[in-house]
Image 1 (cartoon, one colour):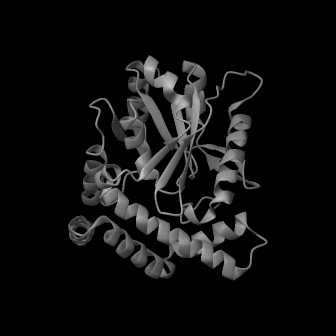
Image 2 (cartoon, one colour):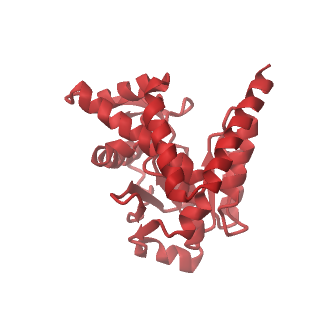
Image 3 (cartoon, rainbow, N blue to C red):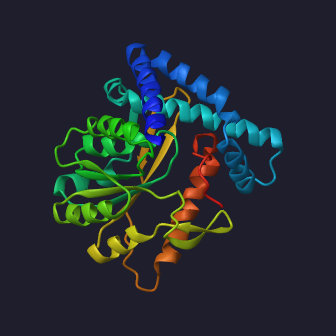
Length: 287
């Protein structure tokens, strides 16, 4: 019965996918953002989003919180559409890169790094962007429960890459194996580090201890890899700006993984507070 439901969901998704594909990109984006903005507030996860936002901004009024979440749904609708049309997004030069000098040495020397970012603006452009600027990259993603849709999305993601060495791997045992093999083949890693990891360590995030992935810090220390944060924002005209911050190392033995992650969280908190309408509030981060 579940597989039948998944298949019917897949058929509906395919219809939306082809609708977005045949329409002009800007019109597809407007339709998608409208749908998410209008109907997102009726979904179960809207309560989660409001709860998360209230935790981060306890002094805001209810109306201000609802406004942030409504705009967050709007951004999510745009992001989904841009994912389905991701090659068009790149072909129309909708992505700007800032501070490329922080990764130029990495590109020229063909060395590796661990890139970190969060679910803000359009996070789907991160892996293909790194791939297109000349970095062989493995992107770790959470699989979708609906296997039919999961395969379609993975195919779209994989087709956005230009290098044969870059690829995606699902979070779990396979990704752990792929990452270690990738390190041996001069492949860098991209991680989105703002979501809950039930097997992770408890680290302070917006004044609350939450389960957080720190495995990448162990890899960075063991293999002496630089960690490069990428700030990702959507500017006023709807285009995306990726800013490559200065690399840093996790090689100070007096700083453990939890302490380093707390420093990283402080930077993430700044990003979220500066552009709260672009963060993915709908995830159960604080529960």
